[in-house]
Image (cartoon, rainbow, N blue to C red; front, side, top):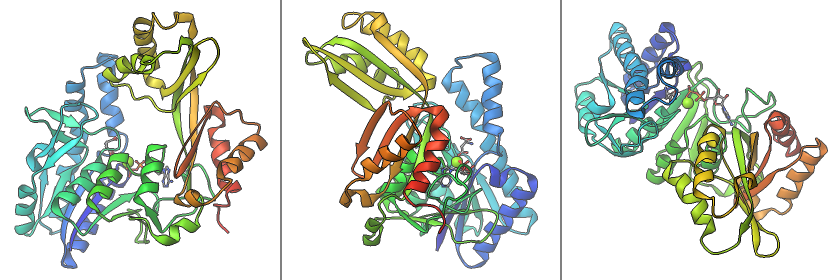
Length: 405
Ligand code: ADP
Ligand code: ASP
Ligand code: MG
């Protein structure tokens, strides 16, 4: 088999752990498999590097930021290749531009466009373990790019897809994908199998165990993803196409995002095109808006509300004050911060009634005020005050009966 193994920051956080990763990769190779290892920076390193840049500029040039942030992974691939050699194995490190992980030029959030499989295949043919730097790529002009926080997951699944690997193993600091973040909900249960669709929702709604784009790649190229612990040999969670039995479970996970903000434009003249006028300049500035709600009021006026990342709020307010002056006066543009979006996810809710009702009852029992609601076929999200997020996640987890029996 061809196996891609990805190790996250905690799993390569010390020299001992890197040696441990080396032994695991060699053991896999000794079973007769071809092994590609993708690694993150040592835990805390990416934050440290970004912090250094912040000390020089509060809004650093993103091209330079990627030059800096990508070095964390350069160190770990070198260390791991050395560790494999020290254990008697053969290994070569490969940086993003050496594999040639070609991305677009959206620094700090680049998307992978193409992966050349030749350098990795050459290393494998020479009997080596190929050690690939996660998180980084290169654009068509040769600039170093990074894939966004948590991006090594995406590097790993994309490399697995390009090589047509049999499995992509994501080694992390928990035993798999749980019904809620096990570091928040102590009764959370590990799930043995989860569909790509559910995982996509969980990842986009706050469960950082997999970066959302890694799940997109897995789904598109049908790469089986096995999320498991780097500290033991337990079977983890398989992310796979949906299976019939999954429908029996109404809610398979509860999750929350932090740091959401909400913007409301009140008393806007209700005419065709206003929504585009409001959102276009935000999109041009790369600001991602989410839950969008419009409520018609009276006399041809409407209220338009949407959420965005709290870190983008100041920029968004500046932009809206300039671009929406003809729609509503600045005092009618109101913002709220410190919000969180809690969500329940499950393919089973397609065929079960009363799931939203139950969610609202559970939040009401905790006296939690709901600001906004949004649903898709397989998820229900409520925007609430961030200080109640953990309480809400625990109550929903209990209320939907997800805890250990
Ligand atoms: P790595 O450094 O290995 O990439 P991350 O910190 O990015 O690890 O992701 C693992 C973390 O994801 C866990 O420690 C856990 O706190 C968090 N997490 C959030 N939601 C979930 C979930 N539903 N299942 C498992 N882990 C989760
Ligand atoms: N080192 C990067 C980060 O901290 C990528 C990753 O860990 O996946 O975001
Ligand atoms: Mg991660």
